[in-house]
Image 1: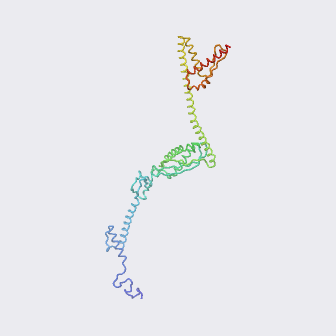
Image 2 (image 1 turned 90 degrees about the vertical axis):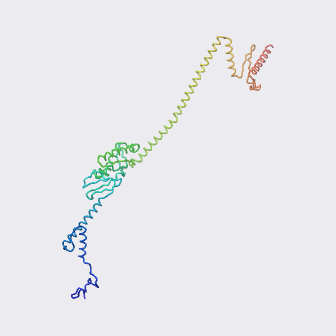
Image 3 (image 1 turned 90 degrees about the horizontal axis):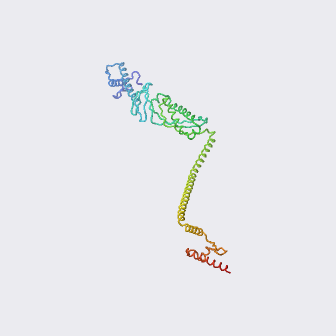
Length: 380
């Protein structure tokens, strides 16, 4: 028999009392207890026993709304807290309008949804590469590749003034580079003018960015590569090689000049000094001879005959001292007397042990013997 059939009685209820056990809990009672706790928490003074079903539902709805509002306020306040790093600065827009001043490093709070915060790194160096082909000042096409290094100097201008500052930087770089290359020749762009080209591009690019109000500061412009177009690169390389050869030859000629000219100047100076010394020698010798002649003249005036004889003897001595043969004219004879002094000295054992008086005696003896022989022949 089913538990809910008529006449079944209470004992047939499966949730009824079984051995004194209680039935399932009453849901209404549980809701009433929860309501009392919430009313006590939010300050409601209603009592559980005397409150009807309608007022009980209204009190429960007010408590839940209050709790939700409290939790929402806490969550809203927590969402507005943020941290600004040491390298960053914060720019705040409140309902789309700029709030004056920057948010400095540290812990900060701004109202979510109402305020929009932009955290800008002002110390990180950013890089923008750029490569393009353009005409130089002498109507030649050159391929130029540069790298622009920049940082954000004014965060407020970076956020507010320009919608896409990096795009403006790319366009300004293109304009500044074309102006600088168009003002220079191809040789200047490709060779010795690269450093000046970088300086010109940096100066002009910074002026453009300042006019636009981007808040960017260009730190460095590096010329990575400058080259002629690929179809003419081989011919350009030949021209550069010829210029290098020319410079090499000029340097070698300069080195040769530096090595030859000092030597030639030294030789010329040496010859000048030798000529000067010879001149001084000749002049001194002439002056000495003149003084000697004047002294001889003075002595000659005092004793003409003695001086004349002395001069004659000195002249003969000077002449005969350089001769090894003597020709003597013998008085009273028709023959010339020949005295081979070199042979006479050799037959006497050399001149090493003979004095001047010995030689003179040998000469006198030879002369006397020859004179005696000649007189004997004449007497016959």
